[in-house]
Image (cartoon, rainbow, N blue to C red; front, side, top):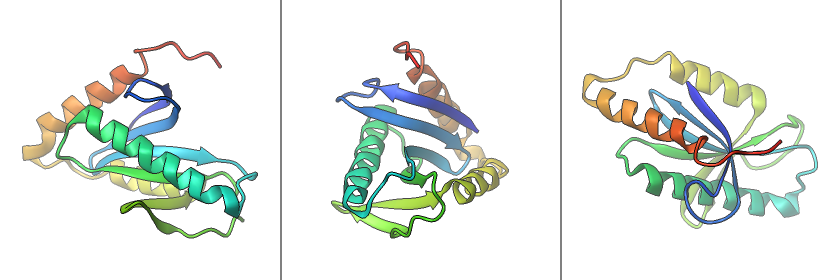
Length: 136
């Protein structure tokens, strides 16, 4: 598992990509939201997740999966867990569920035919964080 955090403008466009996590099963582009997320802001969060995944997918130029995720810090929020944003599926998870999925995917073996591509993706994602210094 190779996460990168708070990647701003590194993959084109403006705005923030909260996290990028690479596992043997593919890449997750994560938009995180806290308890303030209301149902009215949910569609905006879905759009941010989908747009982030689109930008990362274009930057990586890979045949490996690049998937958007909306990860909610508040496990009690009652929002749809599977949604589409303009035809792109976006999965919504609470933190614990997302962490379990990433851990499970991290234990998967990498098919021989995907190893070199996965290594390239990991190097590319890792370099995203060094393209611009992020202040806390």
